[in-house]
Length: 102
Image 1 (cartoon, rainbow, N blue to C red):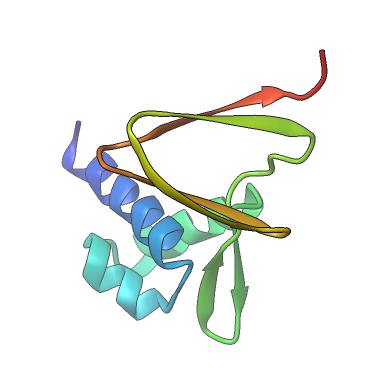
Image 2 (image 1 turned 90 degrees about the horizontal axis):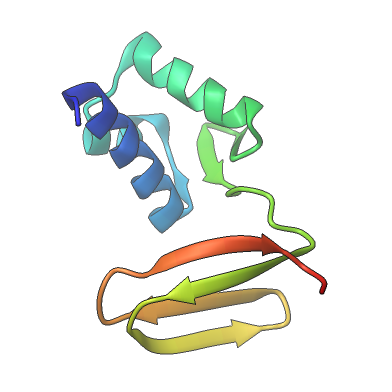
């Protein structure tokens, strides 16, 4: 993986883990700055993965409505409520989204 691709991977990982960060925090965590960071955030915003509000970049994640999410790996525990499910693993987990229905 190239150094640039690694920076973009760090950007997505930081946003998905922390959910809300300032552009300054993202710059220090990823090594992206200036137009490069602005372009990456704008691309994620155009794809619907993030939104910006009052200087905060908020992770929305990909759309999974009407889908079944399958998590593979050694699951440690699960926390859920009617609005959210969080799955924690003893190792790296992999998730797959499949269409719902028969």
